[in-house]
Length: 266
Image 1 (cartoon, rainbow, N blue to C red):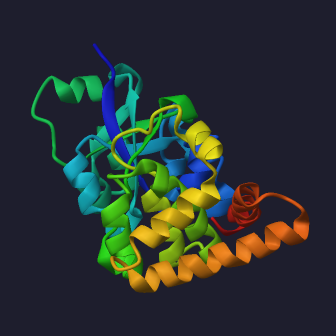
Image 2: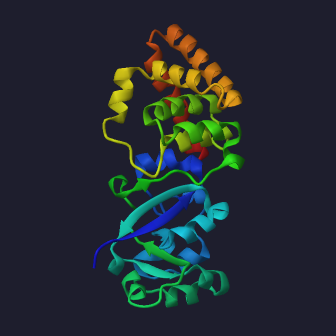
Image 3: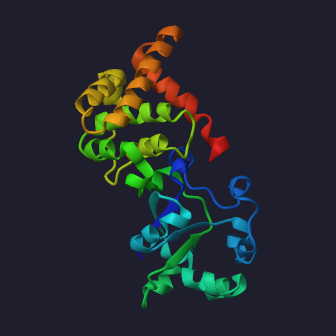
């Protein structure tokens, strides 16, 4: 049987870490999420004690749970014979032992009527090369003044979006739940993967110049957001001059300094 796509949600701020490290198991993340729960302890065999990564089979159901689990959307594929799956409604209504007793390989569910809320668990991390990070499930409520800018640029001009993403990270000042950082994530990842050449093209074109041109073009589209990003660009140019690097490299460097703080705040 071919591999099957499943859908995982996470807080938007964790997307940069997942792009670097892949999806780790609950056991790996016990320092972030707290110790594995009673639900994890009741899981059978190699799924026990948090050694699992979980997702939903239905994209629509995943999207419906974004308020609970986070608006960062990731998909990957699983071998349906090597997973355990059960309806989310069963987890909500039964004790952990009953849930896991009813769980069975996804392959068996696919042979019959599939519940809309089917949760799919695998007992291994998911490596980066098997992940697809999608556009975060965010809108005006999460993006604030950045919403018009994201709408105008994110899908239409990927080169500008990548440059503005760096500015938005800098503008966040390390507040990883801020509208600026959420906008950075929305600019960074879309449903269609970026071409492999996009980073090289940004470097060759000069990210400082690309960002400056994008701000000039969209000043009327999102004036409040552009004002904040323009201030971040001016500060970055000053920082670059003080540190003896060109403005484009300074943009990358200041972004990296802020992202270095993310693991402690994920």
